[in-house]
Image 1 (cartoon, rainbow, N blue to C red):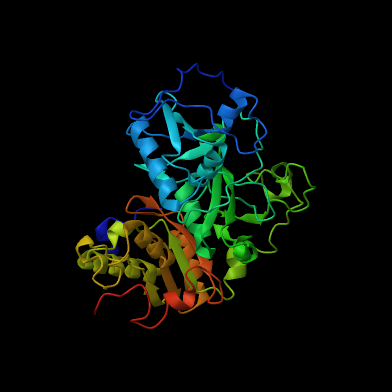
Image 2: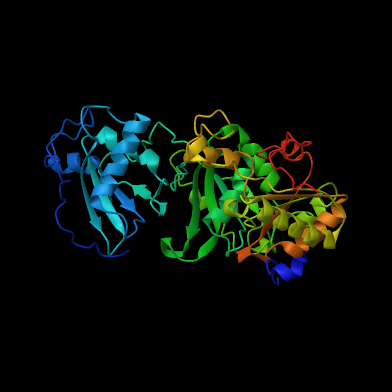
Length: 417
């Protein structure tokens, strides 16, 4: 199959809105005053109520007061988080569909704090943004103690493990950037900064890993990395910060040229030239999705198409495109690989195996660098390719020695010749 024939590779401060009183959920008693468990605000009913409420942003038209309450009740009981008292933790929900947000009232302040762990969780068709109400009068520093596996919070709290990444091409969305960052470990929190909150990307983001020990490895690997026509600036957001100061204000505008903020030195040579000395592995993101990889015949065509295109820039030694675990509900509990996994667990296993990424190992670094310059930013199946170079010593998730392990141990099975 000719690569060009497939058509996959193409040429390169607002006023508040008055809202009605919060409504109760059908079948549940109306909200009642509850004990505040030492929050110190029990004498003020308004503060007590606000400590039990959460703002839920980015809701879609499919979200209703009832299914949102059911979702939070089920998740909190399933994860065993909150006070664990009798009954459901959610007392009431009120949605504002014009502004795409909702408010949820919980039975206690502790339940509300625990529910903040679900910030970023996907509900129906998108992630939910969970915040305290603007008039919340409690401790804003308190963070939920539990991390929900697979959930990436949209709020990155100030800490020594908060990392800044600048110099991002503005055409990259949240999924593109997160996919690159996940190459070094599971993300705990991520926020791509946009104009006015939901406008175009400003070209920088903040993030934190679940495992803080991978932070330095990620910073060393990502800083000065060439991405498209730009170089990444990656550093701890709290470097040099004084206790109690705003650490985000110390970060320079990453959209400015290097000579506009000399406190961050420009690489001695472009990152691509530095990496070219030993980096002969091309990693491509946002090129394929799991749905493209399930059918054996389609996978074989895709594999040959990618290999043919990449061979135009140098001799390819190896190509790996990890495939997802087959999710057959009829085989659950049968003992076969993936049979005992629920869909969420299978999705996490796919991510850990590198599904959605394309790894191309060239015979020499020159071929990899040529491919990077030619393919980064190109369109493949309607998606803009995010590409970077790796050396064989690069520490990534999953490890490169697993990705390129001899068959059949490697996760990405290759089509038979």
